[in-house]
Length: 303
Image 1: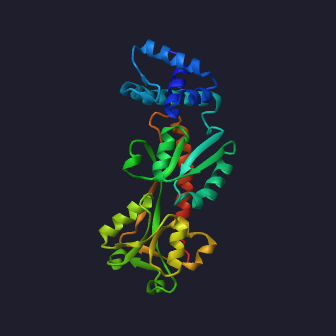
Image 2 (image 1 turned 180 degrees about the vertical axis):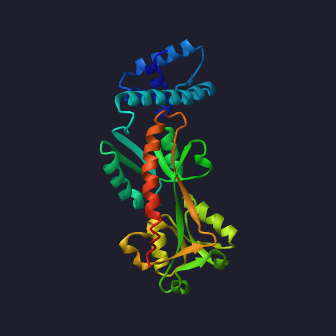
Image 3 (image 1 turned 120 degrees about the vertical axis):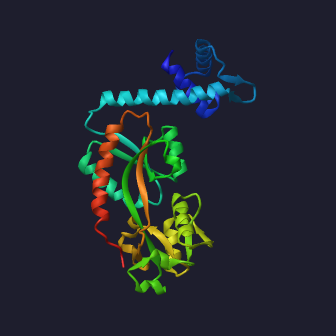
């Protein structure tokens, strides 16, 4: 069985168009079509239902595409292992990071890679969790830093750090006189929220149910910075990841440490279980985890 024919199959599944798939593979359309028929003959299976209107994969074909993607990923990983040292990361690392973390960890990641993996060119892709997992499935990225959830449990999850969530209030709010607040004392408060496409939304929603808080549905923000602006203008109160409060420009909002218990979110580095580059991801994970543990223990919340 020719590996190139497997690549043609995956390309056709991606583009759902013979001509575009052929162009992506740098072959003619007749060549791609002929090789796929040859693959079907070798396997003794019908992979495609060919019509004049559109391409449709059979159920067997779809299952084969999924398995083929795994095989091609492992072949690519073997090539990378052969061309790079076992004690360093590959030269380019495509890593996805969720939007509520990416802007605030970027400088940390850049410094860590420069100091510990100078041969690595890091490419950061910022997107919500479901988009990052789709990119991981299509091999657009190699790994991702996301919040642990049911959706990430199918991958290898290397724990990175537990990030505290702090309460942001306007300096005009009565809570602004406090430095910390017991979670039980927040009962019946309305909480400004991010939109439900954001993984932080579900995390905050769980705390609302647990401590009898009320999600404030009058205003839903797409981004943390929009949420922060609303809090600054005393439109309500909201939870923020600690890292997002560390910039010097955050003085328009007062942040309170929450206790009993302290709300946190668990950040993990995820990648495919079949990825043989695990040792290298573990190197990256260890470097990030050690740095962030020290940084978060500094216990600095802007006043």
